[in-house]
Image (cartoon, rainbow, N blue to C red; front, side, top):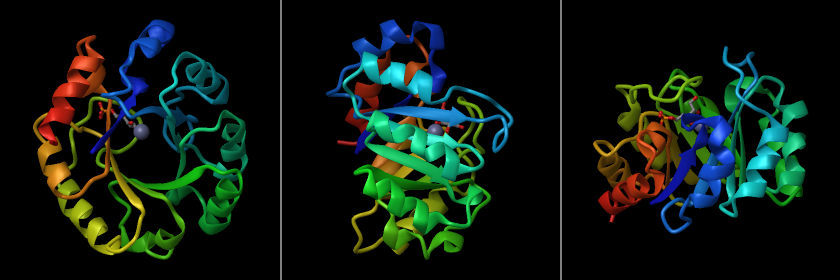
Length: 214
Ligand code: DX5
Ligand code: ZN
């Protein structure tokens, strides 16, 4: 299983120190939570800060856009060459076209769904995408509790993805208690914010999480 470290859970002014210290043997992606104050009430950062982040780490970027109007926001990230650009299914009626556009920029495309959005509602998008991101908290904050029906939904998603190469990513409330279940359920990438950055020892925390999935 791979780990994507959500820098939302770290002190943003300390990123120039924190990022270069991240161990790429433990942390596979740096997860960037872009929030526009519209799709979610909070504002985090946008493409300018994301570009800075990319200058301080060689770990591939995993951009999670919690924004309305992804058609106008997604293109701002093409030149930053992240590994993934993920937009929310709830924000567009033109998901297939957007995925095609991301692909034409040689970037992997992800679609995210909130806990209240069913997998079935996006089943027609699944054959087009590289990554399905299942939110296991309502987006907006780090440090929330994994939703009750999370595991059940992940199992359903895994069923629907049978035989495809689409990766399954889980975001929200991942910790040392639930990561074993997530691994067993076939999750490919876990996003972790507070359980990696919570106590100022991200590499050690990530290695403990990784070890639990071996
Ligand atoms: C929530 C974000 C998550 C969050 C994860 O809106 O998308 O990536 O930072 O943080 P934890 O792991 O603390 O729930
Ligand atoms: Zn996220």
